[in-house]
Image (cartoon, rainbow, N blue to C red; front, side, top):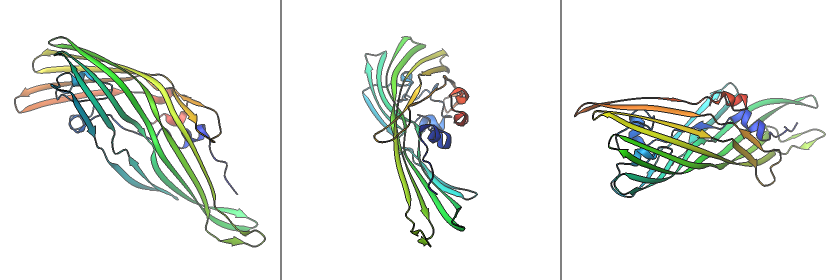
Length: 280
């Protein structure tokens, strides 16, 4: 009558890592969301080269509200994205260098889902509702540096760690108050929590072959993302193999009033060690 509550493996299988969020600001989003190859000086996690042309120490906070609801058969629920996906600081070093410190959301796990079902108990059909709520997410904390080594060429890199946590609350409620021979039926509830950890490194390159054309690339490597039970949460630690992420972008100034941007990004989660994460 009462369900077995999933441990870390089942948490991943049923929810994945959550909703992937791109660490870009509104300007980069309007330019395609690649986060590389944009000419506007800004603070982008994992791409300190983007901050090279900032003239003074700068703090940046990006707000990105996301919410919605869904219905799928007997299942219905809501989802929402983080409100502050990027917090960044940039400090120019002379006229050709910059240091950055960023915190950004990587995967968001704020969701709520309800599934209605019927159980057989002592010959009676008992309607039940399973409510599952997730609150938390995976973030990346990074320190970066970039240097312009030629007027047309700049390089950069960053190191950081994955951080964050997620809490899951599960409640099974019965749509009847009592049954003969059993008396009052109490709701079943359970709460579990996990935290995340793991390293990540990125390198960046920006090249202006012409004054009207800028090309840029970014390569990000991640170690295993560890999922660790917190407090009284049982189960073993789990590791997720994060893929190599490649980004390529460019910007061409066609005339003083028009510029064109294009980009490409790739990250394959099919080798993560968890089949249910293939689609994230």
